[in-house]
Image 1 (cartoon, one colour):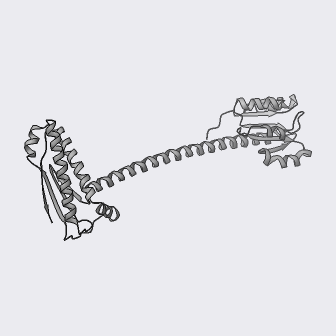
Image 2 (tube, helix red, strand yellow):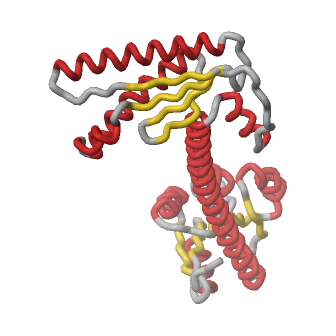
Image 3 (cartoon, helix red, strand yellow):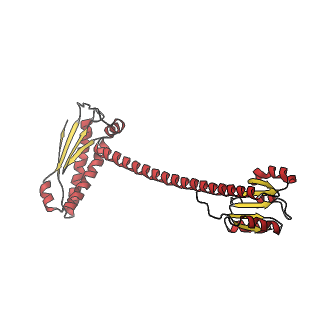
Length: 295
């Protein structure tokens, strides 16, 4: 907490002599501003930072309490009021309403006034420091929340990528079991159908075709084959180069596993024949495929 060497104090009194006495007594320790007008005092505190305000209670136009009530709520300062004994009850009632820090009776004692001003200045800058700490803490919390939000989003994206990868590699039921338990319990399936597909003379075709084009062609065929297998409830096991391995009847047993697999194989061959006719007519490279099924 940093306190200026000569913090500003504003003193308001309708008697010029009182202003001169106050300024003379405290000008070495404080930057003393004085005025006989509450209106002028309001302008002063709007134009510069005034940590402490001291005002006489009895003033011609409005009382000290009424003046403090006119100060905008966004201006925070420490307020001291000077009063005679007859005004003490009024001041006590107004302390909470006007945020009055302390009242001193007139005539004021210089030593007591100095102690009061020192404490008031310390209170002002302590409050200011605490407000800054709260602001910094709020900013830090907001930044932390943003980092947590971003990290959570990143983790969610990574989780979705991992789940997508699992679903591409494994059947849905197996992937879900792996996510839930971290491992998969081995199971035996006695009634399944296995399909193996590869492209005829793929090596010769690959020698004549640019690598990028070859990969695009394989991707086109395999994507369509994926869709056909999904339609018939057949699980893709893996692809190895131009070969495709799939199975029907697991991970969920199905009595019609062979029928499903044959149906998928027929549709795949129809797709490959259609592609062959189209590509041959366009003068392009066509693929033939061989399919073997074992139940």
